[in-house]
Image 1 (cartoon, rainbow, N blue to C red):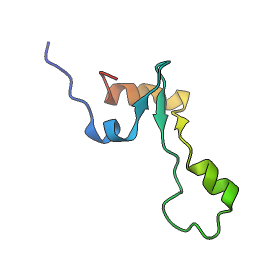
Image 2: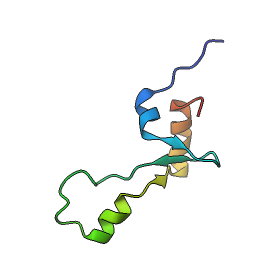
Image 3: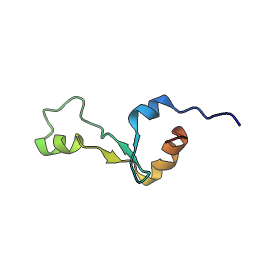
Length: 65
């Protein structure tokens, strides 16, 4: 059986946690920051986990994670 290739775009965006979940960055922190308040920008800077509904797709993209 040949090895499965990892999707490099996914490997750069997701990291595995100790419990087997996937960590990801939040969106909306690249531009148009003047209208966003400080609390919102602070929260957007923090990482979060991938949602349960998308976890299967991420696992398929990262077979060895």
